[in-house]
Image (cartoon, rainbow over all chains, first blue to last red; front, side):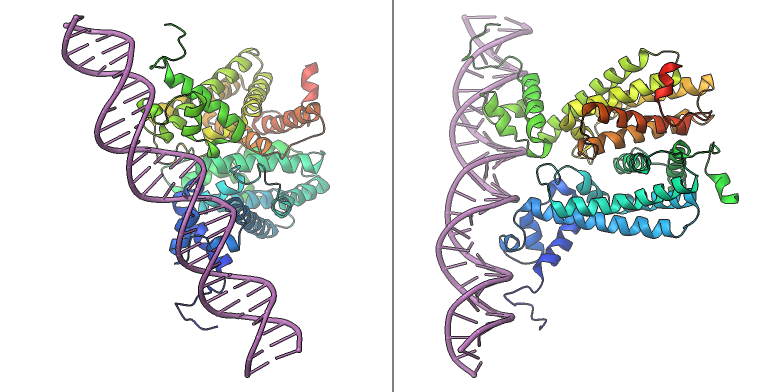
Amino acid sequence: MTLNKTQYHHGDLASAFMDAAIKRIAQQGVEKLSLRAVARDLGVSQTAPYRHFNDKTHLLTLLAQQGFARLAQATMDAASEYGEDTFRALMALGMAYLEFAQKHPEHYRLMFGGMVKRDCHDEALIKTSMTAFDVILQQASYGVERGDLIQQDPLLLARSCWAKVHGIAMLMIDGFYDQNTPQEQQRLLEDMLWINLRGISAQLLPHSPSPLKSV
Amino acid sequence: MTLNKTQYHHGDLASAFMDAAIKRIAQQGVEKLSLRAVARDLGVSQTAPYRHFNDKTHLLTLLAQQGFARLAQATMDAASEYGEDTFRALMALGMAYLEFAQKHPEHYRLMFGGMVKRDCHDEALIKTSMTAFDVILQQASYGVERGDLIQQDPLLLARSCWAKVHGIAMLMIDGFYDQNTPQEQQRLLEDMLWINLRGISAQLLPHSPSPLKSV
DNA sequence: ATCTAATGTTTACAGTGAAAACATACTAGA
DNA sequence: TCTAGTATGTTTTCACTGTAAACATTAGAT
């Protein structure tokens, strides 16, 4: 394939369009995304994307799916660094989750914003989002097995963790946790995640996560 | 004021428009709301609303503000029924919060959806949302004073509670907690809220909220 | 009763998602 | 290698949206 700039066929418009769309979403937010604007960015006609996506919702669904896949990867990587230590693994998982949300706030909002997922019961999307959830579920299961966490259905514990981290992520994105310094914000996030761990811990944990580091 | 149907002036278009907009939002979601459609619903010209709202964002901001006010009222009413009992009050507050989100999912999504609050730093909106938060903060403060909750900054505890309940609300709206029966869902929500209370409790609480009812 | 400001209407424009008809170029089968 | 056939991209078009500008009506103050 030549790098001829004026070629009629783009080559790989589908993925190029998704990348360009993500960029615009990151800048202006999901609700201001215009397919035509993305098409202009790529120097392509306004109806070209319709050869690759049924409609706008279809594109957003694919982007959301992509986001869940990356989130699953990021959280899995983080948790796997602390294979044996239930609480450190869960903390690392949570912080990786929040880091993802902080780095890609608009992408994250798209994943849970309701544009997707309302009517479109996309099978692949649900499956991929479950992949992200399974990372949490697995850590919860390990924790219950080891006796570190309360003897409850791991599904309940995982749901609880996910709700907490999701709530933090959303409010963080909305600017509710803006602090003077990134360090202060980091500390706030850790404190809140730690409170969640206290809630599912079998033993009474200290009030603050810092002592954990000396364990 | 007569009930003359063909009067030129509507009488109270501003609030009528907000009510009609809320109805449409409840049915179709925020992102599909069209000012013109609402205007048609009211049999009024498409530019009439612009005499009362600067633009679409302004309307949405006012609706979000209205939502926060109602949420604050609902949670305050619920918590005030258990004035002395920290955990029961917090559970009631949380369940009232979730009930609001469940009854008005699209309104709730509007409040936190980011359409509002991104660029528009509306003073009144922020103030009203803080009113809703203060209900939680006050309960957290009481709990710390009584020694029921861990001796931490009540602001941290309140933030933690809000994040949890917000995360549950969002995921519930997105359908992640759909159960076979409403009773099962109610139980799931209670269990998750309870886990949050365990996290901020000074003492080690039981694994499940049910024993609380016999206290 | 009259003037003025508040409220509502008509008209207009640019931007959007999407369908239909048409154009081009890559690829597989002869 | 030639030639369909199909995948991909373009042009044109439509209905709809937010919103500005100019105009019309009416309520309320003087």
